Image 1 (spheres, each protein chain N blue to C red):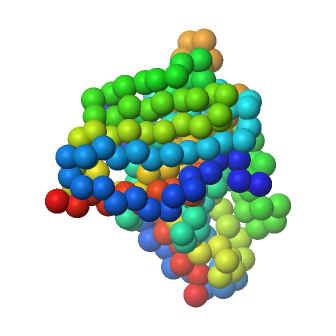
Image 2: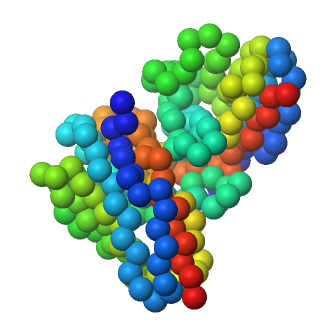
Length: 117
Length: 111
């Protein structure tokens, strides 16, 4: 059973460009979370999605950031008009739901390291 | 507002001894706590978890203790091994929702 996949692993963008980060959850997992880690800090929650639905986006900056998890294909975190402060490691996690609605632990992908020059 | 705190940024322990990593939290609504281990340039790896209805959970060399009245949990690793050297993150959640992470403790196990 393959783990959570993220690509690209490293992404370099110039200021003003767009960054698209992809996440494929573990097989059987329908819940996806995105976290951001700035240097020397812990992981900060950004957004929680289920298939075709955004459940909680309380950690997402109001502008330039968006996320989706379509019925088919990976989850996408999109950052428009990137700025130097967006440079960070972005981690995706997935979890599965029990028949009673309880969520198991979140399993993380290897991350995408975004560098804005 | 840091709801989950790991006040020790680093810890150095000799191989074979016990490592104790601490975590404090402020939100009494948290109902599930997790510990993750992270190597550089990799994603966090789930280690062990504990529900708020328990006070101890053990898995091999790893034991997590929860003291709800003190809003404190700790991870014990015994015996410590050099391969345990990594950054350890404490995390908490409620409403089966997002994880709130601490800032991490860097553990170094030396021979």
